[in-house]
Picture 1 (tube, rainbow, N blue to C red):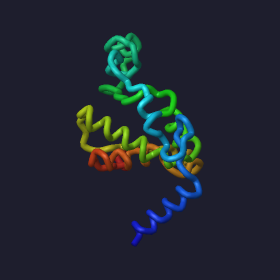
Picture 2 (picture 1 turned 45 degrees about the vertical axis):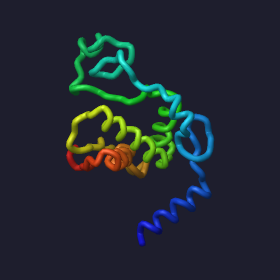
Picture 3 (picture 1 turned 180 degrees about the horizontal axis):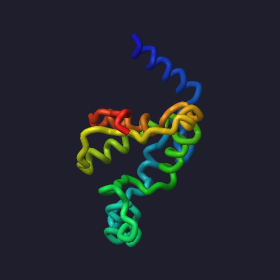
Length: 157
């Protein structure tokens, strides 16, 4: 019964506030197929540590000031429609961007065969959580979990 109510509520919201593409404004989804096809994927060469495109491996910056991580992986360059979608989710309370972004992240993790046991969203400071009303990292982790099957644990950090 709860699932039916959730679906009906979502359908009513879609009628009142239809989703629009962050790239072109076309109604239907937060990223339409055309804009999604135009998103710039991160391809070699890029620094395997910081993911900066066009850099040596590792780049000068990472050799001089090493990061405390094994590597950063990113499926897309952070610009255009992807950047607008992330900023919409993070700063404009457009939570409708989370399912598509999470799906894309999950597909990337699966196709790149990046090992992992659990998804750990970065917590927000309590003041920011009160201001925003939600943690965008938790929303994304929940959506990534649907694609990858990995569990989300927001108590680790």
